Length: 63
Image (tube, rainbow, N blue to C red; front, side, top):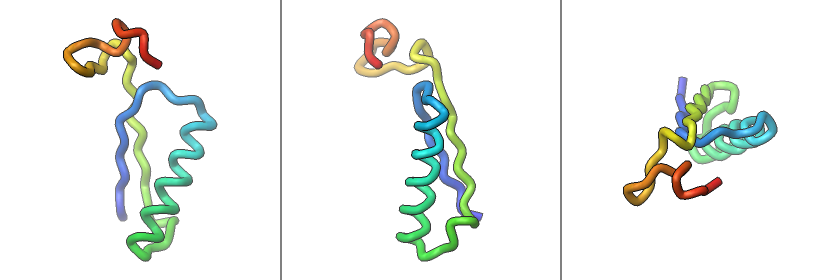
């Protein structure tokens, strides 16, 4: 059971669907495995909980 895990800011449902589909298909192709074997976990974080360059993303006004 291969597991793919990604940390991200908030995503829309359509973004999550596309991300899961693309990650699964790419990993299955590279690893020569059935896509049904993969589990994908998306861990969403609020912008108040992500820092880049010593600043919170929410303070920088980034999307």
